[in-house]
Amino acid sequence: NVQIDKIFAPASAVTAADIEALKPEIEAAHALLHNGKGKGNDFLGWVNLPSSVTAAELDKIEAAARTLRDEADIVIAIGIGGSYLGAKAVLEALSGSFDHLSAPRKGTNPKVLFAGQNISEDYTWELMQAVKDYDIAAIVISKSGTTTEPAIAFRIVRDEIERRYGKAGAARRIAAVTDSAKGALRTLADTEGYPTFVIPDDVGGRYSVLTPVGLLPLAVAGVDIRALVAGAAEMEKFTAEAPFSENPAMQYAAARTALYRSGKKIEILASYEPKLQNIGEWWKQLYGESEGKEGKGIFPASVTLTADLHSMGQYIQQGERTIFETVIRVAEPAHTFRIESDRENLDGLNFLAGKRIGEVNQMAILGTMLAHVDGGVPNIAVELPRIDAHTVGALLYMFEKACGISGYALGVNPFDQPGVEAYKKNMFALLGKPGYEQEGEELRKRL
Ligand code: PA5
Image 1 (cartoon, rainbow, N blue to C red):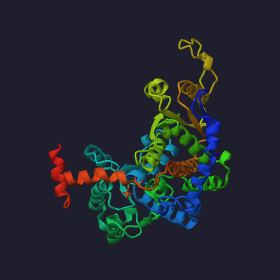
Image 2: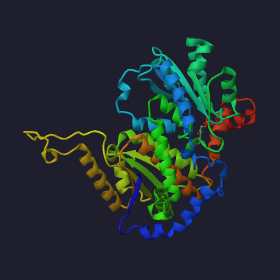
Image 3: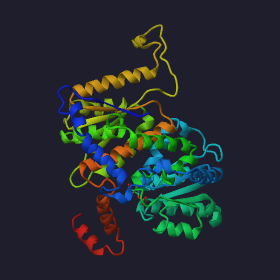
Image 4: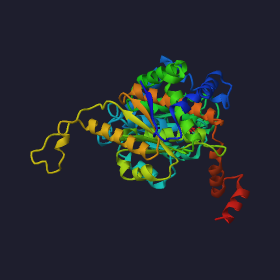
């Protein structure tokens, strides 16, 4: 139920024939994901993950979510990168845009807030202020169990929970998602007796949204995680079996690979539904961390339209011609809202009378795609029938599969992220972490 369509300018360097010519290469890259003979093959657990999630695992996640929902008005989900973005993206996509205005209430309407995705003192202070009159619980998520940002946030949130509810209360109100054996978080969780969930060894952070990393916070928020996983499992089966011409993951990977090779270095993911904005953030991490290495890779950016047509739209239409766009089109809004006729028609909008706002949005999408294509920005359309848990699950898996294929077509290991260590080393050195004294001295001379 997720389809790919492509519109290239008549004079574009990339044609349908160029994409077809990539078929053998894309099929070979796809085969590597299934036969495990490619780079980073110890991180392929996500490929067959959706279909292997068992009912017992989902029961366990839902039971833990129920406990947290019953104990707390607000559950703070602590994590960063792949241990944050998936839950945030899906939660936002499947929530009402103004749900945050309704009061958090345990049992019926617990809210999930996020922490550990930054080291902002103000964010931390404001979060702790915001939760002070509510009962709270926490889910701490870290595969390595040693990441600094969530570790700092967890220390603060855990202290607050223990201060309010004592050690025994904390053990009912804190759940940890981490490695089965390694890391400081595993040691801490075992020592304190927190319920734990395991991130499989062979699933990297940015491919982990369909493990307890994403599923536990989403279940707390009331998302139908069974439909999410079922949608992903359907896409898993479809992309494993469908031929190149009908396979959305292969078509998408082929189109973006052809465009990259023709000189398009930047891909902008555009959506016309504000609630998909964080799908863009999740997608940026998936593609940026998977492909951006060895001096190669498409730079992933995102926009929410039509809002950003009044800002970034200028650049997209007439700036450097090194970009292409991938547009998520949602066919059917969940709600109906019509524009009424107005007797005075002072705003001149009566030509829209009787139309649904969604129809106007669709014409904006088509008009923009054609304008951008005419401006030299090729477009790939990802068609979603609607936004629901099933469809979003399918979309997530389609993007994951296409990312693995694209990474292999690019010749990189799509499952490592050696580059993220550089900033950590400098930060530790500047903070005076034991063992980093020499580096610290050298860095300070440069400041
Ligand atoms: O994709 C990745 O592996 C990373 O973005 C990680 O998810 C991120 O660094 C958080 O790591 P951890 O879950 O070990 O705290």
